Structure formats: C-alpha cells, structure tokens
Length: 346
Image 1 (cartoon, rainbow, N blue to C red):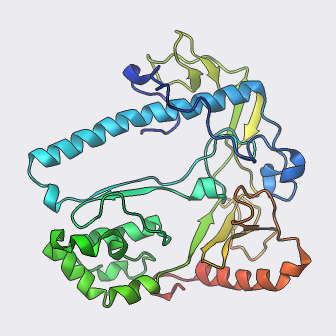
Image 2 (cartoon, rainbow, N blue to C red):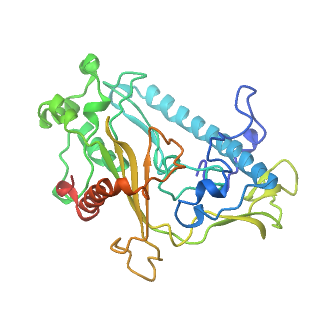
C-alpha cells in the first residue's frame, strides 16, 4: 500500500520531483547525531552507528519514493471525491485521511521505519472533510485512532453497541464540526451531539494526555552494502535507484547495517499535552513477548523529555535526581492507563 516498504511508485511518477520540493528529507538535530547525544537512550538507540554516505543516499531516496507513492494515493482520493460529487452525495459524506503511525528517516541514526516512542513515530495526521466542518480549521486537543470508531458511529447517529463498552475512544465530532456551519449537519449528527450533553463541558473535560503501548516485533535491519540489485518495474524492489534495469541504492545487503529496534524496545508511555505539562514519559522492559510475559513490572529503563525545551528528544532528564517525585507520580499515572479499559480509563 502507498508509502509502505518496498517504496515503488507508479512508473509514471518514478522520476517526478517538483523543483519547489525539498532536495532531502528533514534533517533536525537528532539526524545522524553523535553517540554522546544518545547515551541516555534505551536499547539500540544508544548504539547506532553514524550514518554513512551510502546510508544517507538511501534515506533521501526513501523520502522521495514515499512521496511519489503518495501521488498515486492522491490520484485515488481525487477519483473517489469526484465520484461522490457526481453521485450528488457530498452533503451526506465524510472523508477521513490518516495513517497508523509516523516515520523516521535518519532520526537517532535509524534510516527508516517506525516502532519507537518518539514524536516522529507516534504523531500522525488526521484530515477530515464533510458537512459542518469548517475548511482549514484545526483543533489542538489530542485525539488517537481509537477515537475513530465512536466518531464514525456518532456522525451516523448510532450509539456505540454494548460490545464496544471496553473501547477506550471517544467521539471527536464536537471538535470537528463548527457552530457556524451547524446548518449543514445531518439529523443523525445533530442527534449524536445532543447525546453528549453540554458541548462546552464535553470539550473542557477532554483528555490532556495520550497512552502509548508497544512491544518489540522482531529483528529489522537495513544494510546499505552488499545486497542484490532490484528489478523494478518488473518486480518489487528494495532499492532507491529505480531508473536502471538493475536497480541501485539497495538496503537489504550484508554490511553498513542499521537495526531499527531490539529486544529492549517494549514500552508504555504517556504523552502529556497540557498547557503546563508538555512532556513524554516512557518505561521500558526488555524481552521478547513471544517467549516471556512483558507486563512492565520489571522496568529496566526510563526516559522523560520536556517537549518544550527538547523537541527532538535528545536530553533524557529521567536520571536527574530532582525529578524523583515527578517520576513517581508519572509512574503511578501510567499504571492506571496500562491496567484500565473503556470507561475505567482516566
């Protein structure tokens, strides 16, 4: 599917790159950063090698090819919207465009993929269009993918079935729709909003933190040298140089290697987004869930970041002795989230 490895765009987009687009992926402070800057991080983050010229070439190639694959996704979206318009259903149709995870392209020296607790892996987009939604509007309250199901049911005027009482999500319809466009709302959506009670109270009581949970999947290593060539467009290719019969810039070789994660990468975390508390707190427990229970009662590493002062999460302040009381409160709060379900969650 679009933007997923292998990053093979439609042939008519394989060489396309607008002159106004950036020549490389974003390269913030943690792109190809030093071992010293990573020593207070868990697992393979602390031991990643520096990015070589070959790896940098692959990273930039992946960045551009992912963009090109999304051009085909954009074409598909345009076709769907055009069809809905032709059918005269725009006044009763909502469109949602999102993803299941973020991505990294050289952050903490990991060439590609996701799987980590950091902002560029966990933060995703959500674009929405439909009756009652103000074009160009935004809201800053934290939502997650678990909010999508109750939101779609709400737009349709349906109550969540009893079987969904253990689902953690809540409807974001009050944040999506605008009072200035309330005349556009379907009766089903109006009915849903009425069931939520006072909407000002609903919005003010919204969460200010998001629970994150992840378990080590397995070895995933990208190696920039010594791999076989690819043969795009005849077959899928794990390479970035797709303009020759034998593709170059391949990343499934035997040397110049970069692991995405290791067994230390099981974590639960709290991403807090309050006005006075913009932080990330995470606890890690080593192991492989296929072979041993991971329940975070044997935490062996902690990371804590001030997201206002440290946007790129280079400075883990969990080892600061003055943080002990704060860390204990965060640990207790994290356990509440880890053990809850449905309406029992904070």
